[in-house]
Structures are given as C-alpha cells and as structure tokens.
Length: 507
Ligand code: NAD
Image (cartoon, rainbow, N blue to C red; front, side):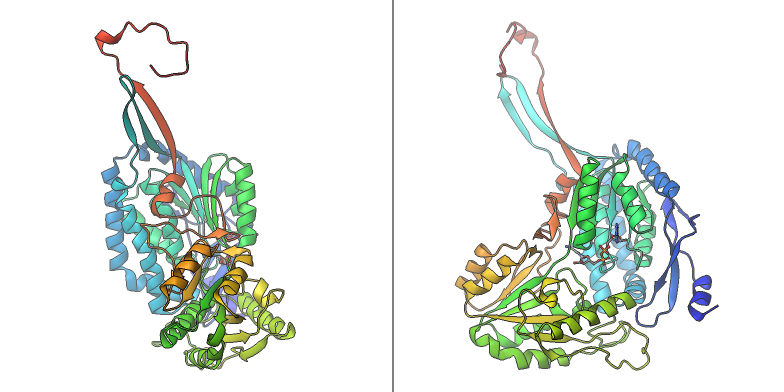
C-alpha cells in the first residue's frame, strides 16, 4: 500500500446532505481531496449513486410543499442568522478553503466574504421579491403579478471559488421560496459542506437544502431529472455548454457562467504605479485561477515601454503555500492543472511569443511537492497562439499591443469571450468611449476585477455565458421565480347588468 492510499483510507469521508441529514454515500466510487501545497489527502469525496441523487431531489420536492408557503420574514431571518454564523466562523472557513484549494488565507477570506455579501442580500428578500400592480386597467379591473418559486432548483459549482459560488446560488434560490440540490466541485467540497452545516444551523429546514457529490454522471442526472425545474451552473465553457444544451432540452430554465479571457487596456496616460499594481494583483492573485482574472493586457502607444516595470512587479510577488503570511501566489489546485499550465507555457514559446518571465518550477522550500507556478509573462502575444486562444487558468499574463484605443477595443471585441474587461486611464473621455463601445458584460474603469456587488447581477456575456439572467441581484429573483400575472374584477352589486361581452377588450 503506498503512502497516498494509506492516507486516503484514514481520511474522513465527505457526506451527502439529504432531507436534513448528513449521510454516508453507499457508492463504490471515491476521489481524494488533496492539499495542493503538500499533496496530503484531506478527505475522500463520494460520487453519489443514481438512487442518492433521486433521494436528494425527492427530499427537495417534498420540502417545497411547505417551504414555498413560508412567510417571507421567516425566510429572511434565516439568512440574517446565516450571515452572522459565517462571520463568526470566518477564520475556520478560510483555513479549510486554503487547505483544499490552495489560495492564500486573506484571499480565502475574500472568497467567503464575497459569498457572505450575497447571503446579506438574500436577507433583504422582502424588498426584492415584489410583484407589480396596476389598478383600474379596465372598469373595476386590477392587474398584478406574483413572483412564485419554481420548485426544486439545482446548482453545479467549480473548484475556484468553493465558498463564494455556492453562496451565489442556494441563498437566493431558497430565499425566493425554492428548495435546492447543490453539486459542489469534487476537487474542494469541504468548505462548501461547512457552509451547508451553518445553513442548517441558521434554520434551513430539512429537505430545503440538499447536497450530492460527483462528476459527469451526477451532473447529467441533474440535467435530466424531471423534478428539477432550474439549474445554475458555473464552470468551464465546455461543460457549461453541455449542461445548458442537455438541461434546456429537458425543459429546464438554465443559466451557465463559463470560461473567459479577460483583457485590460492600458492607456499611456494611466497612473503607472497604480496600474502595474492592479494588473499584477489581477493576473497573478489566486494563481490566476479566477474567471475574472486578467489574462491579456493590451498596451497602447507609449505604455508598451512599461514591460520591464511590469515584469519587475511580477517578479516581486512571493510564491508559497497559502498558509504562509505574506504569500502572494499559492499553488494551482491540482497536479493536472500544473501540467496543463506548464504545457501551455511551453506552447507559448513554441508559437513564437516572447517569454519575458518564466515562472515554471519555482523553489518553494518545505513545499517541494506543491503545484507551484510563479508569475509568468509573455509579450508579443497574438490571436492564433494557444496562450491567447485558450483560457490558461494559471498565473500567466499575455501582453499584446495596439497603436490607439480603437484598435485595442477592436481586438477585445473580436475575442469570443465576454466575462470581464478593464481600462486604465486618467481620461474620462477615453473611459466613456471604452464603456460604450466594448462588447463585454462587466467593465472596470481603473478597476481590474469588476465583479459586481450583489445588489447588481453578475453579467458576463457572449461566449462566457448562456442564459439570459445572471446570478444574484435583481436578475436572479426573476431566474428563480415564475411571474404569474393576475387580472381580477370584484363586482359591486350595482354593476351586474353589462350583458355579454363577445370582444377581447376588457370592459
Ligand atoms: P469544470 O467545468 O471542470 O467543472 C465545473 C463543474 O462541472 C464541477 O462541479 C464538475 O464536477 C462538473 N463537471 C466537470 N466535468 C464534467 C463533465 N464532463 N460533465 C458534466 N459535469 C462536469 O470547471 P472548473 O475547472 O471546476 O472551474 C474552472 C472554470 O470555471 C474556468 O473555466 C472558469 O473560467 C470558470 N468559472 C467561471 C465563472 C463565471 O462566473 N463565469 C466563475 C468561476 C469559474
């Protein structure tokens, strides 16, 4: 028996959550949850059986009968309590997240915090799930809408934000009166499970929140299940497109937030030091494993001379385990991710880009087995090169150039992705032109990662998104509800003598 098998046998198992109980899966298929800085096996996660997926959906279906009628204030107060519990357990949540995902402890707290903001938003559901009313649309006739919950909804989440993204999903789905089946990433499900424990502690009743683990088979079962009404997916473009097509065909409402290639434009009038700091943080933070990470910077005009300063900034970042104080760049999530990113760097060189800074195989004393790649910078990057055409999802920054703002905007608009983009400039006119002309759903002006706060919605666009409505904010209230429009007339005793109306007009 080798060391990893011995560790795996001793490691605790991640439970399923079905009908309010954390239960051991009966599956024979398990996968290790591995610390990416050390390769220590932290836990074993099951790939749930079809019967277990059915049981989770059935629990959600039964719970919906009462949950949908639960007073809005009761629902809101559960999320008020949950936000308090998350705050009280912040340090422990961040430590779990760093252990299984690798990002630095302060960034792990940020991951939890950006999810916590959605929980706070869910607590204000009383002001969000409001219908419309028009009186006297005809004589004595009023029209109003009800935003009714759909039933059992499901969420499928990626590895890179194991706290924030589950919290994008189940709080708003449940606050609007639905029940939920969550399928966390099999790579790092532990912090997600801890959040679910806190959600039950906050008062979410049995069956309202259920969790199943697994991969392709479980996701397909969710897409096909006749008792699931809507699916929110966040992950890669390939899987998201599959989920969208398969679940839409099965008649479900689906939203898929997917892969990206986020560009920033640097105008020569930008504040240099602030811009270089912003770019380095957004390109290399979380080891580049953010869907809104900056992966391409378009240097306009004289800003092309900033390459040595940008490289120096990248070089100054500290690579180490996420638990080390002062670490800027932690490990990639898995050995597979490491070899993929290293392979793409090799392809970049072969495709003719200039490798300004090579972050491969950094020395990290004490963590020799960790999945580390340091900040890496390519210049002269063009469309057609693998490092430009693919989402690298590692700490690799591609630099390209443009002679003016229009050329830079045209370059970004010709890229198929539309998750995020940014401009760095001191010119209001340039910023306004960019904001108006750019065909990307989330725009930063001197802000490198413009992820909206939850009173707005996440509005990635084009190839980065399928489905009309985004997660959280006002849009998600519409996503998780069916609008029912009621036209009503209450007759006065004195208005009974209108006779038969054979027209379509309301009289
Ligand atoms: P992924 O697509 O591999 O996995 C996402 C989910 O799909 C996981 O729960 C996984 O178990 C499941 N899955 C994986 N392979 C599957 C298959 N063949 N069939 C069915 N289900 C499958 O994504 P990931 O690697 O975990 O996350 C990184 C990706 O997510 C990046 O592309 C990133 O840009 C994207 N992402 C996008 C956003 C956004 O808001 N647009 C946010 C975060 C991450």
